[in-house]
Amino acid sequence: MTFNVKEQTNNVINFIRKYYKENNLGGVILGISGGKDSAVVAALFTKALGCENVIGVTLPCHSKDKDKVDAKKVSDYYGFKLYNLDLTNTFDSFVKEIEKLGNFSEENKKNSDINLKPRLRMSALYYLASLFSSVNNKTYLVAGTSNKCELYVGYFTKGGDSVHDISPIADFTVEEVIKIGEYLSVPFEVLHKAPNDGLSNMTDEEKLGVKYSDIAKYMEHHNSVEESIREKIEKLHNSNLHKFVIPTYRRD
Image (cartoon, rainbow, N blue to C red; front, top):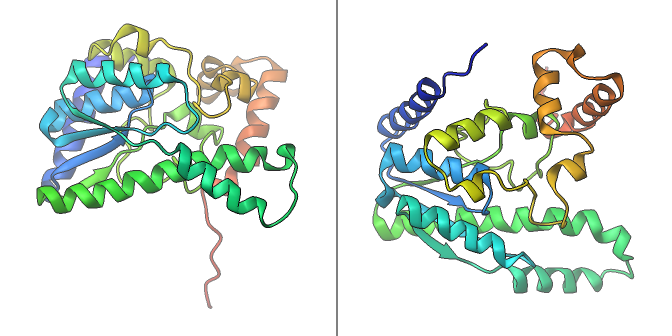
């Protein structure tokens, strides 16, 4: 099926406007990572609500300076306010307290450290959403920036980037997100930068062991990728199903 980028972009913009109007909402807060997903989400909200109602936040945490530079390119282009809230000391303080609990190896702590960063970032975004709601006397939501490919294989952190109030690109593959970004004139170097989590010094595809294009093909037709790739995607999807549903006991 041909992807009609103009139609789909306008549909998302209207979806945002309708939801905000129906719920008497005022603005949006989102983390600007310097990558394509957050840039496209920022562009969509700027078109839907106006740049004066969009607040971007860079949240470095032992991060590359280049990410902050690219985030500034996005905010400058679309004209929304960009704040920087450095979480490096907060992260270090947390890890220092953990060290008091036992002598854990770096390998033991690796995954916990990686996932702590998005959890701190989401706490920061919700704090700022509440703060600016009070300061500006209008309700701000926290926007999610995950795309369909990431979500399918569970490439997100529970209690981190999985937490948000509105999700505009969750039904678009990486390729479709790029097309929307091109349509909205997202700065080229940001839109086409190799996706990475800004946490582990690896690209997303290196961490996953599969390409986003193959995930998109698989979602469209399971047999459209080679068996070894199909097995990797299915393993990722199945091993992360617990991230989508919280088992809750219900009395009879």
